[in-house]
Image (cartoon, rainbow over all chains, first blue to last red; front, side, top):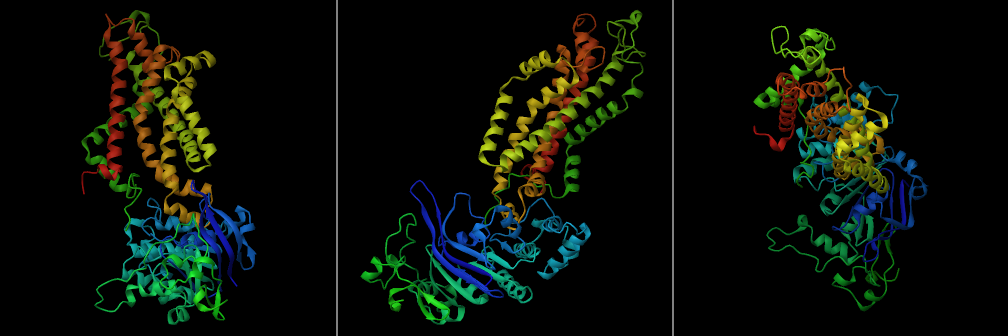
Length: 321
Length: 292
């Protein structure tokens, strides 16, 4: 198993007491697969993706759990060792390609600089490699455009460049945090195509964070559904879409504009809002918004129920787990 | 698409076009010409000056401007024109060395304060504020008493009054750049603090810093002349614009040309560097751009 997160809890201290951003989160990312992490804004998707390379804000506290990369416990590693992993084994691509590239350095300069670990490589060799990477991610005329600056590229091209930079260290795990959210639909499809394509010839895994189920369905092998800092359901993408078992997953699917009937005059919504993470009540985390909630749901938290060997959901309606 | 958060940072992208915009500005051309003339004078001072600037010729003392002495002579019969020309070199040397040192010291401290841990930031800002709270002239007096009047004293005084300002500018820019997504993206790919500061933050702050520094060159020249005038800087008989002014000061009623000759280059260099600095700022800062 490439990445194993077990029982991870993260909190942020505030004046009103700690905010429990992630609670007892467990997930696995096998080598060669694309795992989608889906949830609405504020569900803890970014906290989870930043916790892996330990890039959380300095005030974040990891209060429990383990993160293992190829069996090595990351939370126990000193900062210098973690830094050596970043870019080499774990790389990240961010949401906004407009601001993730340095505006005053040419693309070539940035891409050559990020290969700083290859001290033996000459400037020229780094440049050649950078061009090869740009060609790989589909920048047309890469050899001529390598000395251009970020603002001379479109948003989609910039996201390709950001992906090329992330791939330059040949990482095992690529974490893409909402890589298409800032792009329009056409560009989104192109970037997703690129990621699918890349997966074929780099033997690592991709953790794709998104709030769009369409993106997840398009690209991922497995889905992890995160709600208010807890994983409510996880399983293979086909199983989740064919048989969404947690009421939240079902509600989320109903809200997907892509699945809406043509001519529908209203967007379905999930009533209510995310619970206050500084004040967690006992019982199921989704109970206050759940249309099917029973008395029991407000009293005790459900445990994950195995619906299939690799499909599980945490809901009392699914019987006792 | 979110609005660019860092639009206050001048983007020095296409250098050729900055140069073109600078030359398109009449003020820029004028400033550039003056600065060029001043630098040329300083470099070629030994060839331009018709006399040895320290050559004493008592019989010719306090003679008025003439073909053999363009700016006349002083109370010791020294050629004022030659003294002013050679003084240009001292003025520029002091200004350039002092401003360069200020840029380096202020820049490095500003980067460290802005990017480093909170405690270090507070300590450096405290040092900046303390040094800056001394009036320049009091600081100069104290320093002269301690180490005696010399060019080095002048340079230390200028650095002490400039470096904190540069440091604060760089610190503020670094603080906001530290939050930039491209810096975070670099960290996520394993870049360390030194690499991020040198490769990514420095190029983003160097533009505003250089503009500020170019506009401070005449201030440094004025401080040097002022301290030399007061006798805290360049010691006679070495020529400096300040010592020329001092020589002329006693005879201002009868021979005003000496003080005019010492003051004129001060005015010209201030104008030149200020115009150049302002035109440079306009040319680099996209928000002030007039052309589309």
